[in-house]
Each structure stands twice: as structure tokens, then as C-alpha cells.
Length: 157
Image (cartoon, rainbow, N blue to C red):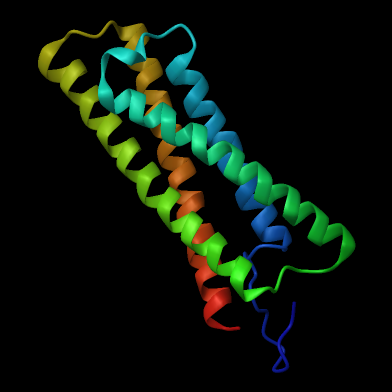
């Protein structure tokens, strides 16, 4: 996707291989966060953990759907350049980015309180909670990067 001046437009925007990599990373890290939080751990006792599970449960289908669009666009060679659709993608990315950051931060704060200030958390559970929060932060980073790339692409249309 080159502009007339030779610069690359939308290197991470929907329909590019960069976007595909970001979406796959989002889906993997969100799934890992959800897995670490919910398998064999009683996360439902804390609202922040339930919020994290809910948001990661939203990020996974969003990322997988856009990854399928990216795969189609890359293989067909037809990037997505419809301004209305791109605005929806940008708004969805920004909303999920903000929510996933809030969920990761609130989960990390609860983990800190449980582990260091209350000692109410067994080392096995706290370790899984920490891994879940770390994966949520990585997913947030990739979602924020997607939002920035897509916003930049929409602004250049």
C-alpha cells in the first residue's frame, strides 16, 4: 500500500500483514489472560477479575474477526479502504483498548492488595492472577497499537 510519494500508508492498518500480526497477538494474549484467570482459579470473588474476564472475552472475537478480514485482504490483495468501516474499526479498537487497559490495571491493583497487603492469596493463585494481568497488559499494548495505526490510516484517507 504505497502512496504516490513512495511512502507506505497504513503499515498496520486493517488489511495489511502488520495488522494481521497485531490481531493474532491480541487474540493470543487475550486468550492466555482468560485462560490463566479462569482455569482452576476462583476469580469470581473479585469484581476486577470478573471485569478482566469479560473484557478479554470481548477482545478475542473482535481480534479474530478482524484477523479473518486481514487474511482475506492479504491473500486477495485488496486492502480495506472503506472510510465508514475504518471509522467503526478505529472506534472499536479505541474502546476495547481503554477497557482492556482499565481491566488490566484494576486486576493488577487487586493482585497487589491481595498479595502484599492482605496475604489472602495463595502463591499458586496469585501467580496465575499475575500472569493473567501481564497477558492483559500485552493484549492492551497491541490493541492500542492497532488503534493508533488505524487512526493514522483513517486520517490519511
